[in-house]
Length: 368
Image (cartoon, rainbow, N blue to C red; front, side, top):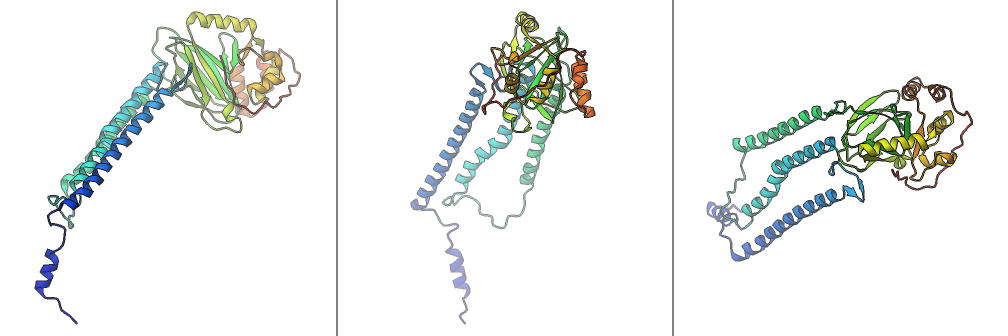
């Protein structure tokens, strides 16, 4: 058995390469590697910036506003500002240090750097521990402040400040369409939702079937609607235009059909639109109400009742009773059949049955 003497052990320890001076060959390859890493980091940052720009440009397609990043109302504008603040905080205090520290550590602790301290037996450090705890705590406190204040400021039940009284609307979610009722005007629509610009709108929402999610991204504030219950949402359109509206909660095979177009109109144009619906709309009766509840999509209703067809594909109804919305809420809550709708309309209209035909398999597009 061979025994290694103290001199040999010292020679073995002293010949280890951890502190030897770096040669030109050692420095050349690590530098290229670090440079490639830094270039990769810059390329990644550019790709992220380009992706954000594409998303912002894609928020408005054609003449239909589709995203809160292209805000068309005060609520969506506040949500966009909130989003930018949150992203800014995360970028400065989370992503920023990572992208800045990564190239530094790669260069500082490269293989050929003999000045970097080698501490294999390092245990702990009070400054490092303080930094790793204080940073996340400050980030959580900052995000919590914005979330708390904006959650109260953007409460969907909170009325929007205005010198005009809000327009009252009632919204009923069906499979797979939305029924918009204007109780004071005595009209209703399916497929389009008209809004006067510069005037707040208070929506009372419910569902005649399963739980649904009402959302107009360009105006802000998504909210859920449940059967037998009424929730409330306050919105306002600042500019005339067309805004995508949809159900964002999956509710069956026709989920992708449940879209509509919200149209922001000037006050005079909105008044003229109401008069036009009152003049040209179809009087609502028990047969139409039954079709609304039994026909799945707007196309099925038009196929079953061609008299409901219009040039823009929407359905316009008149002579709507103010008691229709509460009657439907009560019926769904009690689990009764839609026959009460006939009584809610004062017993008027035809009782003939309606047969719904299956529409062609294509994506429905609501046009104002």
